[in-house]
Length: 157
Image (cartoon, rainbow, N blue to C red):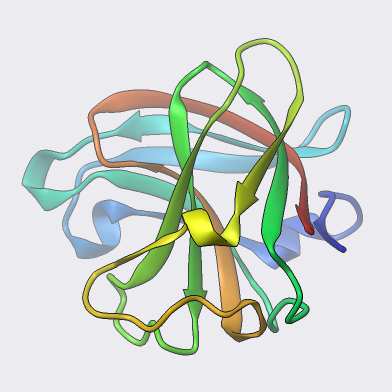
């Protein structure tokens, strides 16, 4: 199932956030465009003042219950990035389920992330259920670095 291919009104479906909403110092931007159409997340991630993220997020109304993985078509700078999922159980702003992936340098690649690879963060959360997912985020997180991530497709397998 296709979640996003960044065509049409994709910019209206995605929101950009940084840790500045909680006093952090990271800055960046998320731009949709290019060939193939993609979201390009760039910026400076800073852990100063208890910060440490930039992200682009899209709301969802759940995924099919038989979903076992997400596939992200990506390229970037060879660094580690994250997919954050929020669901009906993640009521607090700092709660999410997280899985990492490496964005290959200079070429597009399909990266499959099993739902079993997502770990709960921000407190005790129940196991992740695909039908309960309410948002997906592409995130540069957790360490001081320059972020350069492009994603052209997200699918549910």
